[in-house]
Length: 74
Image (tube, rainbow, N blue to C red; front, side, top):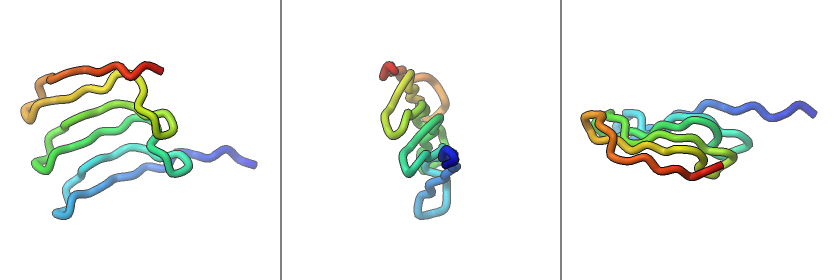
């Protein structure tokens, strides 16, 4: 049986702007993800391992300045 491959996903707000984008593996968030505000600015980014947050997640201000980094470990 072939191993499952990650599938790209883009989640939209009601007005059609991108809310989040990343990959899913067997239905779970997996790999790098980015989350955006309604105005299109990047709010947060990080990685998932089969639905679990891992590594360093970064949160940004509307103008792109670093707010905080949180390390979720492996």
